[in-house]
Image (tube, rainbow, N blue to C red; front, side, top):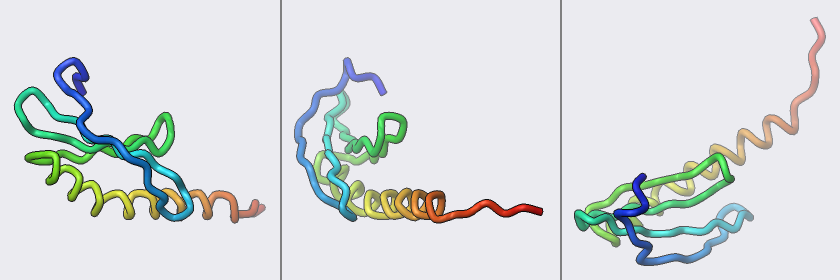
Length: 85
């Protein structure tokens, strides 16, 4: 992602599954856009779009699925127990 060729055009925060997430929409030099959400410093969701509205629409579809998968994984990891063989 070459940030020199992009500019943020929109930013908001939402609460999804009891988690506050930021959504940022960037415009590229070629006119296309992408939406970005940082779930953690190492885990970033990026969704491309033809324009600002398209990027945000695609992101709104993908984001709940991505967050629910991570929440499920977190619950599985914390709810487990050691099994001895």
